[in-house]
Structure formats: C-alpha cells, structure tokens
Length: 386
Image (tube, rainbow, N blue to C red; front, side):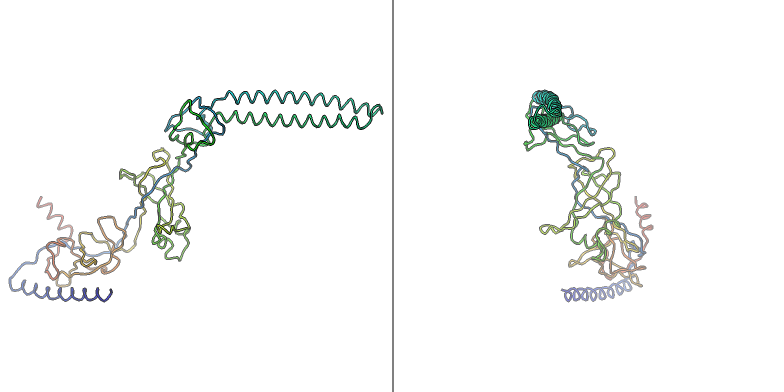
C-alpha cells in the first residue's frame, strides 16, 4: 500500500513539474497576467475542535413509586409533571380495613395488658403466701409462669399493633425525595398492589441530570494518552462539556464528565460514560436526548479553511505557492476533529507556507502561476463587487 501511494505521489510531482514548466513558457510567450487568487500564510495558533456524542438524559434519581399494601386507590393528590417535595402525599389507598386492623390490634393489646395486671396480682399474693409457708413453692411458681406468659402475650399484641399501624401508614403514599412526578397510569378506583408490574408513578430528581453516552476504544486510548495515565486522571483533565439539545440549541450550563465504565462492550467496542449537568430550572427531564459536546484544544496548530483542500485517491491536498508563485499540489493529513469549516493540519505544512484559499477545485491547477492576494484584499474585492 505504501509503495502505491509513493508512486502516485511521484507521478503527481512529475506532472506538476511539467505543468509548471509549460505554464511558465506559456506565460512568458503569451504575455499572460497571472490571476489574482487569495492566499494565506501559515501561522501556528491555538485550535479548538469539538467532538459530539449522542446522549440520553436521566434524572439524578428515578424512583419507582410502588404500594406496600394492596387496596383500591381512593385519592390521587398530584398530577403528572408536578414538582413535589420529600414527604408530600401522592396517593391514598382505601384505609378502612387497615384502620379496622389497628383497632382490633389495640383491643387485643388492652386485653393483654389486663391479663398481665391480673397475673401480677396473683403472683404477688402467691409470693406472700409462700413467704408465710402457707403454700408450696410449686404453686407460686405456676403463678409466676402465668405472669410470664401474660407478658409475652402482651408483647405479641404490642408487635401486632405496630404492624397494623405500619400497614395503615402505607395507605398514604408519600414522595421519597424531591422531584418531578412522571406518568400516573392508575387513578381513583384502580387496585394497587405490591405485586403489580407497573408502578404507581415515578419521581425523578432532576436537580441534576446524568447524560449517558459512549466512548469508543480509540477515545479511551486518547483519554489515557495511550495507556500512560489512568482513566481517572484523564477524566479530571477533560475540559467542561456542553449539551446540545434535540432542537440544536446549547444548554446554557456546562457540565463535566463524571465517570467512564471500566468495561468495554465487546458487541459495540465502546464504554459507557456519564456527564453531569446542574438543572436548577428543571428544564431538562429524564428521557430527553441530545449530544454531549467535548472540546479539544490543540496548541501551535496549523489551521486552514476546508475549502482550501481537495481529495484525490483518498488523499487530501492543498495548493501551496513556491518562490516563483507557482501553485504546487501538496499532500496533507488532518485531524479527525473539526468544526465543519476548518481543518487542523497534522502533517504536510509548516509555518510560513503559503496556501491557496480561493478557486480550489475550479480555477486553480497545479503549475499555475498566481498573483497572491491576502484574505483582506479578497474581502475588499468582494465588497467592491457588491
């Protein structure tokens, strides 16, 4: 493959030299004036490029609200999209049977307390008689055992009351955290059950949102500088990221990449990553889509307009001017990151080179003599024509 590229490049160079010679002769013999074409002189600068990754947004917490007891819904206190606070009532489930269970458990506890009181009196009397040697120790022991049984029954009744009260409290379904109410599929009269597949609703805490996207294996290598640093250090070194929404606008608050999965999915060759964005206004919601924009800064970069390049045999070229102001076809390589208007050149050009930025692919040819004009002169000429 390398041999073919070198052969094509050599052939292109030979053709360019021949064309230059012919163009010189024609210009000299015919007295032609070289056309004025816009040319830029390469000066290294700081280049900013962006990479975009499709994302799905999720709230910081998305909590499914499920009933703890079975019963019919008697009241829905909120509506879809409402913002709620922690502890706010969301649903009320029919309380009649659970209140009855509490009343019965309370009655059983009262009965058990009475039994304990009676057993205590009996035990005290038996102890007094035992101390006077009126009864045997066995008779007193039986009274003491009955007292212990009564106290155990009271403890059971107390536990039953606590359980009944807990079940009654479950009939009032409250928000476990601040957030926004999701879909409410069941309304008043519907049966709610802990075994139901569908939750009553979902509470999304959207004070912060997570943007989930994927890093390719190449991205991970770039992040770790080819494995010379850790993923954690690479994440800390990343600049702030932006969020482009589904309508193409940019979310006004920047975020940061928080985590990158340590496992690469064999089927996709990518690792899951997560960026975090503050969402004080609640504008972002779980389920939103968009793109995370990750900026890349390159120091001392050579930046040229994309319109100054052309492709041939899967290679990218520009026209540079030699000392005689003759256009020379020059192969270059560019960074895969670009802003859609410019390229960052990684090889093929250096500071001080002059690059043709006008007429590439239309009027400019290799070996063509050119009278260079600056971008400012070209802009002034366009304004004069208008």
